[in-house]
Amino acid sequence: MASIAFIGIGVMGAPMVRHLTAAGHDVTVYNRTRGKAEATGLPVAATPAEAARDRDAVVTCVGNDDDLRAVTLGVDGAFAAMREDAVFIDHTTVSAGIARELAASRALVIDAPVSGGQAGAENGTLSIMCGGTDAAMAAAHPIMEAYAARIVHVGAPGAGQQTKMVNQIAIAGVLAGLSEALRFAQRSGLNLDKVFEAVSGGAAQSWQMVNRWPSMSEDRFDFGFAIDWMRKDLGLALDEARANGASLEITALVDGWYAEVQAMGGARQDTSALVRRIAK
Image 1 (cartoon, rainbow, N blue to C red):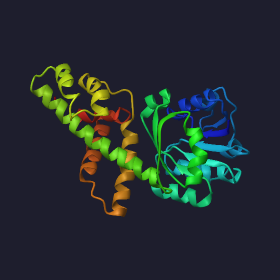
Image 2: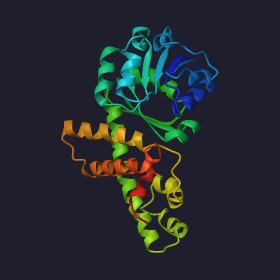
Image 3: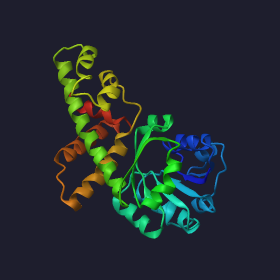
């Protein structure tokens, strides 16, 4: 079993830590808000550097590029204290640029954003898309197995983050279509339960339909992946597209629609609240 520093004890990090300890790993935690770290009942470090010292692995799950840079390269950052043979695993959704920057500074670095949301973290069934070297992947895989159902090495440093962008682009388009389909069914006076039964077993079926049609039908959005975070992720994808020349017309439209829902007070609501911008 490995000795691990886990940095970032939020809605995703906390359950991931529980799975690591259940698997027998020795975990020390750090969080900017110390109370969240103390709630784990595990040893709490005062700084990322203290957490990382003499550990086999350092795992991060923080907010954005600036947060990640602060806990790795900043004052009291983890990188200055890590052993040369320790592996660094980042589960934050950030830019491909910072993923490559961190990989250039150490031998064993994996950018490993996740999909599956809080439920996936709680159930230990996350999908993880990984960028990095074969050696880094070999070191990281046994640790990530504790909380993942699928782990895919997609390519070189930064490729994990680019793949997460693909994931979010696809989700945005699916939710836009699902929102219009639901409102169309409502306007047509159809029984929404029967419509779901009819279409969810065919070509229109998706994870979003199966998991969000019932709650969207009932205007329930106080759970799940917040629109604020989705807009952050879509912004990363749009920035990357400007750099590589990809056309993301639908993504840009959906991002603008999410801005409308934010203005309606839906910033912390689930991404399925996209339907709120369409009148019943």
